[in-house]
Length: 86
Image (tube, rainbow, N blue to C red; front, side, top):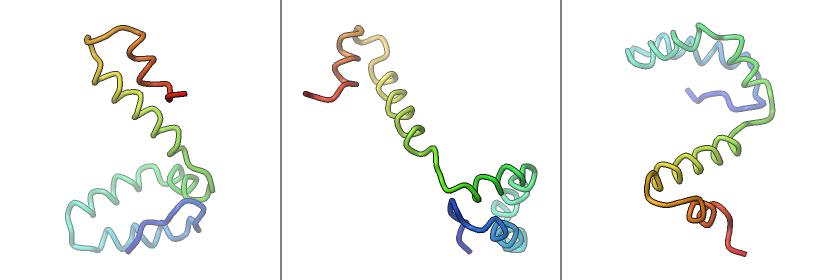
């Protein structure tokens, strides 16, 4: 049982959810039940060939930098850590 990837057939999602519901693993069954609540959004996500992974990765990187530097330094150090060395 593998999760359908982006650009895949949305029909595979129904099969995956059925397998998860009948897996006998309580956590997986609950996960499938939660996903079923917003099935249209999931189908659209799987049907589209693009991903927001690059954007999410950059946001995660910036938030990590912000947490690491919280209260330690000013704008210049933050700028130096964010911009690549030229």
